[in-house]
Each structure stands twice: as C-alpha cells, then as structure tokens.
Image 1 (tube, rainbow, N blue to C red):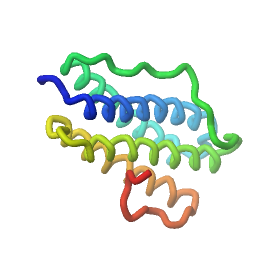
Image 2 (spheres, rainbow, N blue to C red):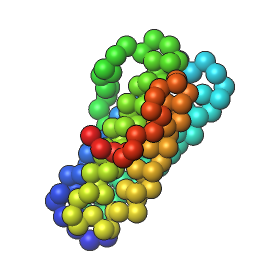
Image 3 (cartoon, rainbow, N blue to C red):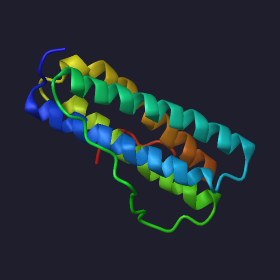
Image 4 (cartoon, rainbow, N blue to C red):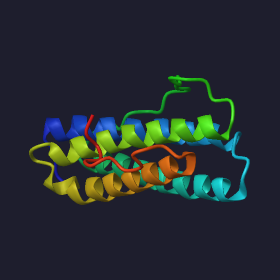
Length: 148
C-alpha cells in the first residue's frame, strides 16, 4: 500500500486506539459474564475486535506509519459491578469504535481503507445493538451508527 493522506492516518489511528480500548473493556467484562451465552458472545466479539485492530495496525504499517499502542488501562465512566453494568460498558465501547470507523469512512482520501472501515462500522453497530437488546436499552439501534 502507498502512503495514506495525513487525515486518513489520523482517523485510522483513532479507530485502532478505539479497538485497543474495546479489547480492554471486553477483557474486563469477562469477569462479570454470568451466562454462557454472554461469555460466548464476549469471546466472539473479542476475536472480531482483535482482527479489526490487527488489520488496522497492518494497514498503518504498510503505509509507513507506526500504529498507536494500547494503554495499560482505561477508565470507565461508571463502575462495573455486575453483568448488566459490564454490558452497558460494552455498548459504550462499541459506540466509540463506531465513531472511530465512521470517521475513517468520512475522511477524504480514505478509498484504500474504506472497505475495512465499512466492515468495522457495520460489525460494531450490530454488536452494540445486540448488547442494547440484552440489557433492554431503548432504542436498541441508533439511526446513524458512528455519529458522535
């Protein structure tokens, strides 16, 4: 891959950083997963987030850029004390990933990474909807995923 325009690099950096944070949040949520179906969904989501992060990092490397590193820990906007609060944090994390990938799509010059960004935005929006349904949050699906 050739060089990416600077705005695309910045937006892809932010999307990869959101994926790092999502993986940390999913790791935290596993400690509170009380139901086998929730644990299974967590495992599946972590695998997908890991893949998206890795592909985003590789895209940045292929363009001659250094991907952002994961932080050692992330702060939560509210305490995580049980499965329901963990799932609410997953919704927040998926929303942040959606915003990151939507920003990549909206960036002029993003054609080389548009397919990855669209795939990621779709996946994060679907997972956020699934988690909202799990905890009975309304509306379950926002009209335009990825809008801040």
